[in-house]
Length: 467
Figure 1 (cartoon, rainbow, N blue to C red):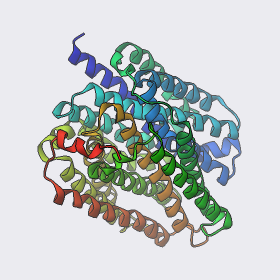
Figure 2 (figure 1 turned 135 degrees about the vertical axis):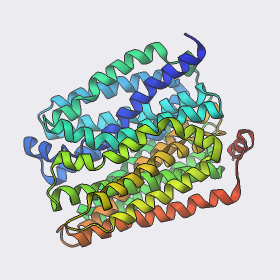
Figure 3 (figure 1 turned 180 degrees about the vertical axis):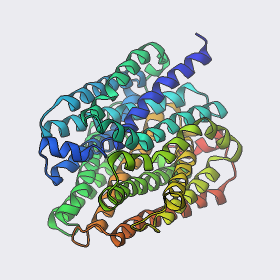
């Protein structure tokens, strides 16, 4: 097998895995009512079927990225994928709600290590430039497609049994694991220099886990309650200790100098906006379609199909567009489409027009994902040294996951502020949160256009000097 074909074979395996990682974030959504009925879960317990995965995924991404750099990307990827497969199997077999939540958490932990390891394998296997941009656009489009199509798969599988939503990833993960052992490049075993920053890893992991836990629980406990405020103070204290630790160590978990890069910082903010606003919108849309309009689970899932198909069909073109126009322009256009999609859904009513509102709005959101998601990943990793690719990808993925949890918590609070009664007014107010966030993201993305038209990789890399 030639070097070129080996690269693309490895990319195919990595794309399958990131598709599964993203699929699991959204696929459980439509199945929740069936899970609640069969396992006898309360509403507060049910949310942890989703939040357990987010806790494991979002809380451990930074540690996962740095571990891949230090222990070898290929090794970390293979072990984490095996954990993901086993946890998927357990999640589909258990008959207890607590065990299901635990399996989802472990599954999220597996994803937290596979996602940054996979991205860093790509960025160290494909040389920076058009070839890497094409590979990244395909990889990230698969992730976006998995997330967008998750609800569709969930709707189809839930018609049979909710357990199939848990079990479906198992055979795919096992096949991917066998293929990965054969095709992943051996140079992905190379390790970065430096020791393990166990103190820093403990502090940042604890702060991320506590932050996600706090924002998920805040709507129930109350945003101004002593419990919520105390938890947020603890998060700030842990994060402050983490920063002080990283500044004093020779080999920190997160070299803070990496944040001197404007493109990387804007990419992270961009993913907070993209994932945060869309996760929240998806939750609101589920309430609108199912609870207010009375649509079936499958009908609700199919409403999201235009966005998912658009992302999947355009996946191979995003690298070429990034080469031609630059990532900054793609991100700005994507952010504008994101805001436009949310603006359309402000026009929801008790009798929405399928062709005048639902489909056009979903198409705009699909355009936003198709343009923004690959461009943000390319922008975040360009110019980063090979030994910090895991760190850069871990930072980016953390931004997306934590952003999703935080914005969802805020939108849930807005949606239930009227005593829990779902109405057109409360739904519009919740969608408005996503719209405002998208407009803020658009303004921030536009600042990148003023600073540069295109920056060579060699120049961009200068932003990553030590503190």
